[in-house]
Length: 194
Image (cartoon, rainbow, N blue to C red; front, side):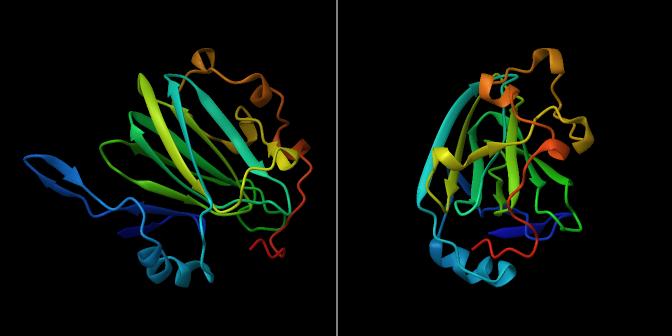
């Protein structure tokens, strides 16, 4: 697995080693051993994922920017297994030097890339292909009482979703999220999130 650092420390892109032949391809999409050996030293602790999720969406669907409030914050490892998405992580840790900044990466079934989104970040994606199947691992279970979000359309974040706003399809819940400046955030850069 190749690990690519991004402009925000702790946010990574993973490229698995893919074996191609006449039959198709094979790769390990996740190995706890490799994760512990390669990723844990970079972030200072081990991670044990406890829940896997999958969604299917059509072109123009935007989901996010979601996070869970303390004490149920989540680290996510996300990938697109069919189609293409633009995946985004936004730093929402108060006091962070990169607060309000984001990293965006295109995840596709062809590039097999995975995106590591640590705790303290809001996460979302936009579907760029006709349909997309999106999978992600979480290191904390879903807690509806801790569910929170930032508006996908918050212009202060400077995210180019690569989808015209007129074509965006959002859930009713996601249309109600406040902009970052109006959100009540309950963790900061000094909190122990793990």
